[in-house]
Length: 247
Ligand code: FPP
Image (cartoon, rainbow, N blue to C red; front, side, top):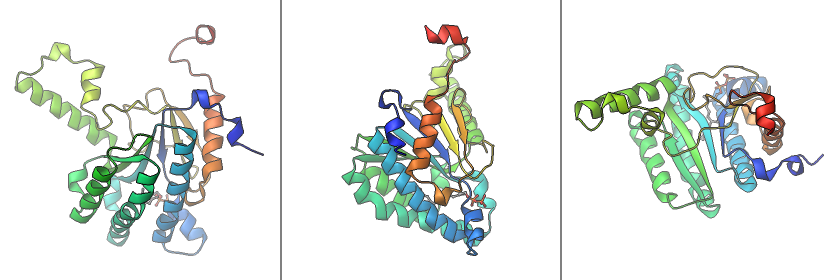
């Protein structure tokens, strides 16, 4: 069955966000340490990114490391940070060849210096690419992002650059780390969990949520196609009635 041909390329989501979950469970299933799951998770990242770019999706955001992930065993945190450096360095030329721009959201300054440096190099080296944004959420938490936006706005008021009566959704969105990127129409979470886990809370107000039991290291392009087909079969009403939407 050719899933790709079932996708309507005219109504692709412009932004897909993914909570990549289940690396640890996948490793356990194979009798291996958790880090083995993360390493294999990179293969899923590669295939998914490539497939999204080939389809013409303009933005893909991957939840790679949450603020809460610092609470994991030190060995795992260090391995994830090392994997990040290795993956970015190893993939820069492929990203450039495919005209994909690397971006990142989150409290990036608090990443270990080596990871931060590799990330900035990747971002800088791909900044003129135009086909798709690959956005990594790193040391990211939506509540942090919202608090940060509130602080920036308060500072602007203190500096007399803004008056409170003029704060609207646009003013607020401009202070989020996703500023300039459209909200995700589709949010995918793997591994059978049905939670948002502090990811893009503001931006997913109208997103379609797609939960799949597939563990992240097993996620491949066909799973992405299935999620997009499911998305395209849903009716997005944005608070209106079915009849109003059909017009
Ligand atoms: C969740 O699975 C996964 C993570 C916290 C890390 C995701 C990282 C990668 C896929 C590799 C690095 C990616 C890039 C883009 C460089 P889990 O460990 O919570 O799994 P579990 O719930 O089964 O324990």
